[in-house]
Image (cartoon, rainbow, N blue to C red; front, side, top):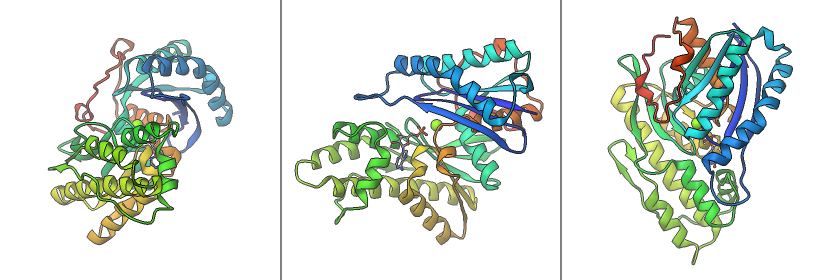
Length: 323
Ligand code: AMP
Ligand code: MG
């Protein structure tokens, strides 16, 4: 069943095509403001502007015509309202125009499902580390539940904010990773964990203050070591608590080699298996939306167009996992 996925929860608009076995196409475009952060309405305008060309391009890459599409899947939430509404509107227009069913999916669950699909992980604990979200998610009692999360900003957001305040444009994460490679010492920063929850705003403020007396390389390194150690610790706690022996990474920050290394080491030390998809499937992408939409449809889940209103606060544990 050829499924087209539409993603637009935040800064990225993306179109992916999945045929039940293979990802046939993935085209994405990300808003990169010259200065300042992401403004929801600017991002929504960006999505309107790029949606047509991305849909055409993805169909072309897959070698399909629009009439070959059999299902439309879109990310229904969580995310920024204006951005979600563009993605949902595009998806509804496609569904009505092509006369095929539509299915709205949860964006966070899609990060987990694409990871399972690509890596073969069966029942992992997912460390979902992205710009807006930072959660530790696992299946328990028929639903994906959030065992730990950030109490303030997402880890990617923290990296991007530090970068932006220091004159480095969005996305800041990859630049911080590069700078960290040339560090010569670690400077302790606030390490903030409560149970399985983390927070990053204290670390961000302390790191910004350090700029008066330390090199950017050393600060970048110290931010990474501290933030990623926190994430690794809460992920390990969730694994121990749930008795799970697989860990999966997702979200844009999972592109980071140092984070991968730290979580992999933790997994090896516990005798657990480590999985991480390649970077383009970690960042926001619509292949994951197509994969999850396809799974849900195959499991018998149906949605009417009236049920496709977006849900900015769509919780991970609202969905019965019957696939
Ligand atoms: P997402 O929100 O999942 O689309 O991912 C975007 C976030 O991932 C942004 O906050 C980026 O700064 C961050 N990111 C991307 N690549 C890296 C990297 N190599 N290291 C750290 N953060 C990264
Ligand atoms: Mg995401």
